[in-house]
Length: 245
Image (tube, rainbow, N blue to C red):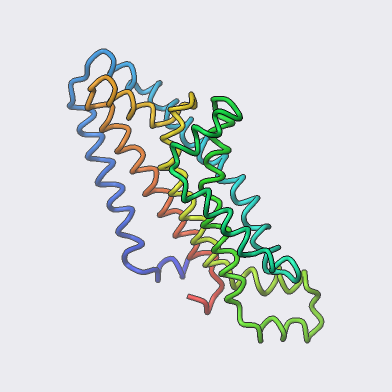
């Protein structure tokens, strides 16, 4: 808690922005006049279900990305496997460099439509930040510290777990936070392949010329992205070992 109290001022400006944006949207929502279609889509039951679907899609992809990228990043900094680092990073970079819509369409031709395809597309798209930050974080650990740990009898695994990973945590978590924000925004595209998300509001608003749906979808996605980014920063500060800040 002490580290959170000493956090930079900008860490506490973000929740203020979230609150202001949230209150502004709530006031607009209460005072706006909606068409029948807008009322059906923006009714609380439907809106809550859409938000939960978006969060479920994002978190499912995030768990899979973390489970893949961090172990892979660790492996690529160990011994003989390090020779494949540039190849693997370049492959991951192709996933993010490709247009998200094009990537999802290609996956649809292979896997069909629906939630599973959307998750696969998001994982491919968001793996690079975590993978790259894991490698950079572990490479950035002072070799003298690692050698000192080995010198007092730590095994390679114990050195990794108790020395290298704790020191690399700030960089790794920064990659996780970046990936989460990417996932929140990119998840809106899942609506094109039949997976419900806040993108459904946006695309419906554009297609049927319903500004209220478009505005609601955009603001809610922004609020989710800002909230996740802020929570990620708090976790990053809390998990950073003392003396590293």
